[in-house]
Structures are given as C-alpha cells and as structure tokens.
Length: 341
Image: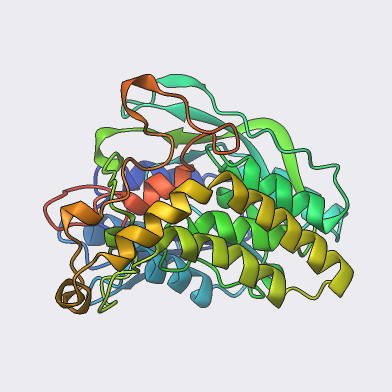
C-alpha cells in the first residue's frame, strides 16, 4: 500500500495529517511526502516524521512544478499495488486504509474504494456529512461513466484507495480545469467503485484552501506553472478530456460509443458555457497568449457552484469537487498555506 501526500507550504496541518496516516491499523504501507518547493516549516515537519518512522519517504522539488505535477510525482514514486492520495490538511480515521484494502482484496473487479466523508473546520470541529450520491451497484461502464460525470460534489472518491494498475492506465491529474473529475470518470471505465459505509475521512475546510479563481485559463498555469501558455479554451479541454478518456479505454466499440453519447449529453448541459469559453478564448490578444497572461475581459465568469447571491448551480453540476478546491489552494507565492500539488 502506497500513500502519496503532495504538499506546498502546509505547516499548519501537515503534522496532524501525517500522524493520522501513521496511526493506521493497517501498518504495511509507505508514505511518500512530495514537497513542492515549500518556504515554510513543511520540510522540517516532514523530515522529523521521516526520521522517526521508516515508512515515511520525503522528497523535495527544487522548483514549483505545480499541483498536477506534484500529485503525479507521488504516484510515480509509489511501489505498492494499491495507491491513495492524501491531502496535507485532511485527517484519516485509523481504519481508513484497512477497510478499503479489505474490499480490494475481496473483490478484484473493484478499482477504487473510498469511505464516507465528514467536513471539519480548521479547529477540527465537525461541520457535517458530505455525501457522495454514487450508485456503486452499476455494472455497465457507460452507466458508471455517466454517473461520475454528473454527481461529483465533494468527490471524496479521489481520496480513496485505488489499484495502481488501473490508475496507471489513466492520464492522472492533467493541467486543465477539473482534470481530477476526468480522472475519476476515466477510472470508472476500468471497473466499479465501492463506498465503505463508515465516516473515515475528515475533510478540512479552512481559509487557507479557499483560494478560488473565476478565471479557468489562469488555472491551467496554476496546475502547471512550467506551462508557457494558458489553455485558451478550458471548458473544451474538460469536455475533450472525457472524450479522449473513452478513446483510450479497452472497452468494445459499442460500449465506447455509449460512453461518448453520455459525454455528448453532458456537453449539451453546458453548451452556453462552451460558447462563452470559445468566444473568450478567441478574443485573447495573441501577445497575452504567448506571455501566458489572461485579460480580465476573457474571464468566463464565476466558477462552478459559486454563483453570486446564493444562486443554485445547474442540476447536473452540483458543486466543486474537494480536489478542485485542494488543487486551487495557495498556488501563488503570496498565499501562505495550502496544497500546490
């Protein structure tokens, strides 16, 4: 079992997150901490834990490789047949790994197992349950694919335990808006998910991770600061991510066609967003595209689930994923805390 913990400037909650992993009742695992060029006490905290426990492997990036690169680096460094990403500010209950591994050992068809999630604040006070309305009884790939695309609010599944072999067949986290959702959808093509009916993940909401942007084009450079140009058409990158995921799958042509039809239905929900995205991208001056900048006039408006005045999001788009929040957190040097990958 491998646990990958990507972090940037996470000194405030890192020790608690590490402690919760090291206190697991399943003790046979490696914990890979990938430090994305942190400038706070993150290196000191991680090295202290590595010195005390041989299961902790600390690596550090000399430069900020972005959220996507750092998430994927932890996976590349993993060596066990099961893999889990761990947020630096979340807390796992002691039986988290054990309950998930039991399911994967028992049912070889399951590619991802995750528990129920409870949200907490920065002090650890419980805010409430965060249900993920996923019907794990679905057996047909196109049904699973459609469901994951439509019901992703909170997305605790991204923090579950996956078969490494299945994850290796995906593109992992890519450098475009909502690529974590594309990853989950692609993973569903390789097999069913399973939810453990226990509250074993405490997902932290706090000011340090609430750095949102209404500019999805800039988000691509947050995910990958080494990218020379922002993605001009982020909504289209999102949609094409689903399309290409189906094309890479080993499914028969008939089943892939059904999946593409589900992707087309998803796109139909968002056609206005796609048109706005296209017009905004085409209006970007070439000089700004070359420099990796995005003018305010090209912003596509509020990000998903953040409509002003309490407006409700589209029924097929019930809110941001927790990973989307994590990937958005503190990507700029002036933000002192949060995940950068």
